Length: 457
Image (cartoon, helix red, strand yellow):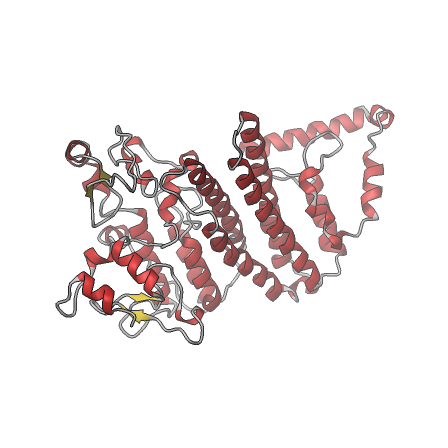
């Protein structure tokens, strides 16, 4: 809110300067009327005004891209003219997606180039920080302002493109998890760790813009298309954009139910008491949503919740300990129930568990456990279940049976007959690292190694 007031004040001062100092502006070669006449002849459907907006400043030296906009800002003027004058073809929508894609890819490439340099200076880091900021501003304008305005426009020419615009939103959400896999976490290489978290934080913010556009403008979506891709994006934890303790899920569930079941009642959402009783962890074999805990800058945690930040950066869970787990020196003490807490020594475990009481407090009350239950209840309501009531999705990566190809088939865990997997790789990861071995309820007496050998044959 303070940002908007500051911006409004700037605009008031700009108008005053234009009135009082119009002659000086003409002498200095800055004539606002002349600028408007020039842009009036531009073909806005080429989208150059959007493609190169991060390089432009207005007559007062203010950048076109901002966090918040006023009606008189240059970008809003361009957008208004574009909506009025555009011929509104499918090609225009494709160009918008290309600009979004180019912005995302170029930002990731810049981050990778920076951190593979032999020496990374403070100036390099400041430049990268500025680029990340401008890229976020640009993606915000593309999705929330441009795409949002086209989706909600009452004009017939834009209504005809509704399906194409929804396809654009779907494509953005579909691409982001694949990009996240291209920058994997590494246990010991600090540069790759930085690239991983910096990239994932940026991708999460980009995905938030797409979701916010659909949510804020109450755009109905097809659950058969969007639920699977949103499930994959949940592995980035993009739906909780404020990086807090599951703060956004309740509104998101209401939004999903309202959009997917327009003529039906909004079903009961799980209460806090129910959520706290479940400990199922939402997992991803290619970097769990828990990676978000490393991104301290946008977190709202108190000091006593700090250990949860280190789910994938293998620091000892005791807050005062800096011991890092390595392949050669694995931490001997790890909770097999939550997989959040691991310790390098008995003294650290004693301090964290009994003195500070962190592990008992958070073991059964993790963001992942709540997210998994919310996801299951929502998808059950939308029909994504089998006769036994379990979601027909891969427990490890979220893939649905429809997405594994005509030759593929989802397989159950042969021990409990309740959990699905799309491949042996996902099943083995979930058994060894995802925690299923500790929660599997056998239908017959089989040990874990037998299950690994016999499953998915």
